Length: 270
Image (cartoon, rainbow, N blue to C red; front, side, top):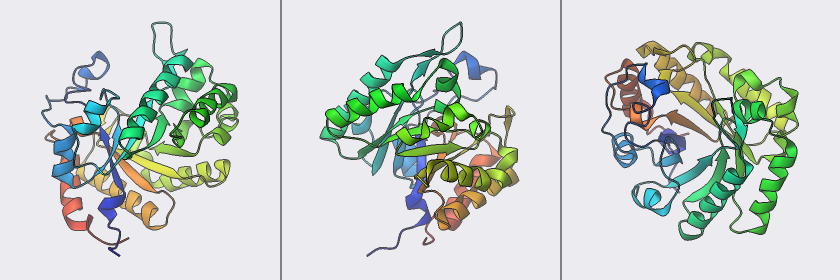
């Protein structure tokens, strides 16, 4: 049996080309245009697990465009943004779940469904356990059943509205929004484990410090990768996602660090 490599437990936050560069929200950050597709990011990094995010359509054409991918997690949200703030969108979330299940029936590489920004946007919009129970009913009655995951941010860990919803998820995406908090990250992961009864977590680190709106230094990215690797070795997370592909061809120190770290550490055994 071939030993599991560190690289095998890493995930890409897959995005369409220029996904962030084309949005008004992120245009002000001054990202250069990107030409990198998610399939090209797989080839560049050797990371073959992909979260279908960042404007990638949730359809067969998207997964067919990534023949090198080994696993997929489909993604949607239980809310939608609007001028007046976030609004609940349970029908749209259920429709996306059905789309993911239809794709998974034909392509077993799709093996989970993530409700993104749950602990922030969805909770703000009024999400309750009842909304998740309805989704789980759809999930159980219409095959194939997919593990339902939710995104829980560190700033939401003491929100009792979030606590009430945790039993309805099979696992969690646990991102680190503020890169400066990287040494606290293991504690955040432990807190989610305590609150959820030890359910599986997919860690997530960023190539850009969105929490502070600034480019990461080489040292900051290296520290994120060091902590992420230790979480994997300690089996605190089942994987670590790197966000995201439309930033991987920026001339940033964070990208140089990632490439050099993968070359040095990617094939080490776990």
